[in-house]
Image 1 (cartoon, rainbow, N blue to C red):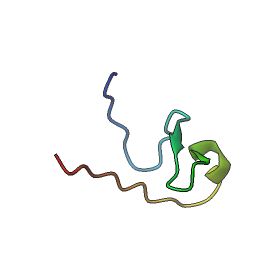
Image 2 (tube, rainbow, N blue to C red):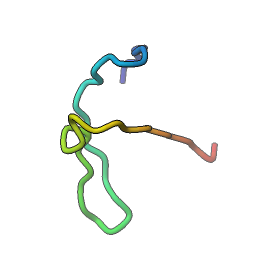
Image 3 (tube, rainbow, N blue to C red):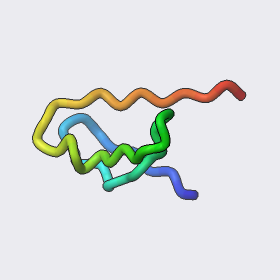
Image 4 (cartoon, rainbow, N blue to C red):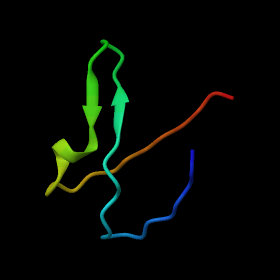
Amino acid sequence: MTATTTGAGQRLPDLTLPTLDGGDFRLADLRGKRTLLFMWGSW
């Protein structure tokens, strides 16, 4: 795993994450829409 920084208005690399219902969430599906991506962990 690598970490990178991205500024406001810059494109993020595409990523796919599992959803709670067993599906997939693809960031690319939101391309062209204003999006707030909020990630957290319980550790």
